[in-house]
Image 1 (cartoon, chains in turn blue, cyan):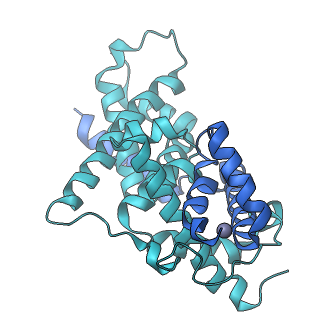
Image 2 (cartoon, each protein chain N blue to C red):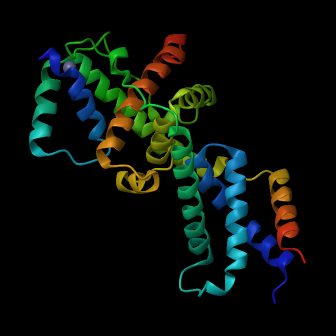
Length: 83
Length: 190
Ligand SMILES: [Zn+2]
């Protein structure tokens, strides 16, 4: 089974971005049953993925224009559109 | 003719943070994000007659910004690929020739909800993202930081889905490794 880890790690990653085919799902889950390394890898990827989901929601409050950036933007707009 | 100062100020006041955040999540660089917001407001001002009010002003502004971001990302990918071979396959760093793992993989015990509010972790994560090869970083940022769907990522970067999956896979392998060394390896594991 070991030879398949590289490919299975790809499937575990793909699963976060697209729907796997039934055959791919079968391959993935069959391998996971037998391979603790890939099981651990997949659960870490899922945690990382979830962490980014949470980061997206907290960033709605964190990422803002500073006063200085705002002032610079306004000055530039006035300069370019001014007269 | 409406007063520029008044209008631009109003737009900035109302939508500036939103536009800036939208750009930052996709391009990472504050200066670039600021430029893109500026270009967007300029274009919006110049094309204000075309805004019909059928969508909200914010949706219209974001639509303009999206185009600016796409142009920027494609230009960067194009510029940096000139004179540079294909990003090499890093999988030998993680897998033996027979396709098995180089080293044992450990499960993470961290709770994502707590992790996302940990400033130290966020710092390490930023450093690790910064170290990703260019194209991987761009694709990964769009997918995970901005939360774009894979087909949207492909459209923005002008790449095939297969290519996107390869890049995302590599980025995750590298990011996970980097976090393990610089975060979990430093005794931060709970
Ligand atoms: Zn395996």
